[in-house]
Length: 140
Image 1: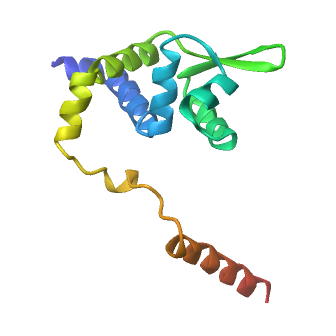
Image 2: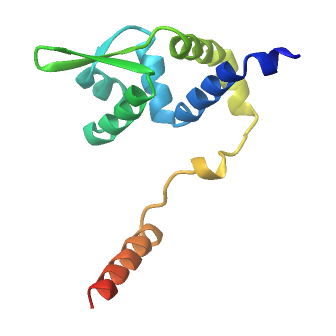
């Protein structure tokens, strides 16, 4: 029996973590928190994320047991959970050292289709217009 078969639950946990961390904003949050706990306002300022978007990502990370939230007065302080999430974030940080980051950038690997940035403008407005037309037909 191979180690892969023996550690299947751990492999599933790692795969789930990597899926969650595949979003650049969530990855940036985890890497920032390697330096220590931060208030939401500090994370917002450090990463340049808008509060509604940041809250959504923090919720995903919290629900996945990647982050812990604690309230201090009027602030919510986030930290990385101990264990697998912390170890994997540290490993990713090590891989992303400047020499590794420049080597990865030099490969010019295009983003995965599902990771492509959302379109803005006419194309994205078409979807909302389509939804509007459907809702109007449903009410007729």
